[in-house]
Length: 91
Image 1: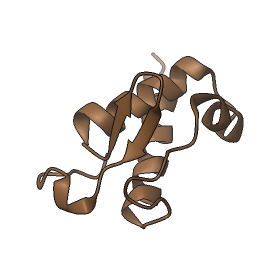
Image 2: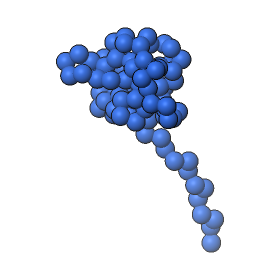
Image 3: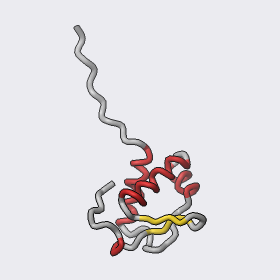
């Protein structure tokens, strides 16, 4: 009887990888507070992923981490560090 195949490491969804990279950049100060964040299409091109993937990544940054805020028709902006949640986890 053959051994069972080795277990694979769980696959991280692409939107989580994009969100983690952007969160790291925001925390490192790459984007100024109040500065307009890159557009969905620009991020989609940069990371070579679908726009829906970028939307989900931005949702993580906004809803889970509190690093950006988004206004319809205006785009997303970086939240100042003083206004971010204190339980800000590492995405």
